[in-house]
Amino acid sequence: MLEMMQLGGRGHSARPSSCLNRRSFLKIGALTLGGLTLPNLLRVRQAQAAHQRKQTSAIFLWMHGGPSHIDTYDMKPDAVEEVRGPFQPIETNLPGLQVCHLMPGHAKIADRLAVVRSLHHEYGVHDDANHLVQTGYPQLNARQNGQNHPCIGSIVSHLGNVGDRQMPPYVCIPEDYRNYMGFYESAAFLDAQHNALNGGGDPSLGNFRPPDFALPDGIDLDRLESRSHLLRQLDAVQRSLDNNSQVRDLDDINQQALQLICGNKARDAFDISQEPDAMKEKYGRHAWGKSTLLARRLVEAGVSFVTVNFFEKDVDWWDDHYTLEKNLRARLPVYDQVLCALIDDLHQRGLSEEVLVIACGEFGRAPRIDAGGGRGHWPRAMHAVLSGAGVKEGQIIGSTTRDGGEPKDRPLTPGDLLASIYELLGIDYQSTVLDRQNRPVPIIQQGEPIRELFA
Image (cartoon, rainbow, N blue to C red; front, top):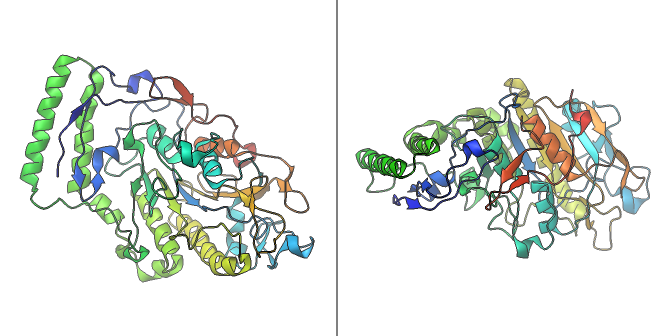
């Protein structure tokens, strides 16, 4: 059903030139098509920062739950058994980097990675740590208090370079965390158009499915075009009430929505059945593989930021309090396949300089395996992996103490990581956005780009 327009909406932007008049803002109401609310998912990409250098997109492999750094990229083979864990290290083609033997694909592609080993913070609760790493702002009791700042994908949607206007700028696969255990990946005080489009992925993901871009029953193109004409007429009336040139951009919002509904580009991008069988095998015929393959299709089609949430109904998230060995024996080979396939695929397609890949979670795991056979939450040491988009690859940044409990050298924060990501995507990490009171708010509270990441 096509809902009508509403008055009184509020626009927020980093700069006055992109901020609509708050006294008289004609906000296009929802074009609700098969559950997809287009004007809340599409944005007019304007007022680009003068320093923005290139069109770069990102795939963020979000390892929710907190992956163990000691059992993946920061192994401690010389430590006591309860610290080093049950896994054996293997050498990679990046000197000095050993990884778990369950990640053999890394041995061939590690020289295309930058592994940051010395990240740390103070928040040991999933919600609070998630808020910090995804937004750059601390938030105590985040589950109760909600998300107070925009996540990285929403900031990229709001401030990023102009991309393909037929594609949504920010997509989460299979969905964002707004409705899952209190975790958040939303636009917060930014307009809802900067929220993620929940991408669904392959039908084998259970209840998730690709967005429905088809017209609803009873709505044909003639009616849609007629309703669009009505919206344009009402736009003209509003402009006569408030002669603000910015309002003209609302016509672009309608046009962008119509392009997405009536065109084939977005529909095709979400259709991974178009991929050859060999590529499906390369990524893996499992939820993570299909989701990551879909992410590659989306950035290739013009989406600016894609988050792949590595979880399946509590089964595959990384919160290994118990049976860590059993969990990682099942999970790490899949993760290895997915990340290595993505890195290699982007390289083969000539996209590695255009697409930034990030893999991390909200914290690491405790140095010692406990009586339950797992590792507890550990924010005092964690890792992140980056590749592509101008990252200086083939290096290890920072180190941890002998037991992996704290940074030993080059201590870094989530704010530093986010500042680096923004700069790699062509966004000034010192940018501000306007909150609901039109006050400028920095996109991260503190942090500076990690100098080693930049060639």
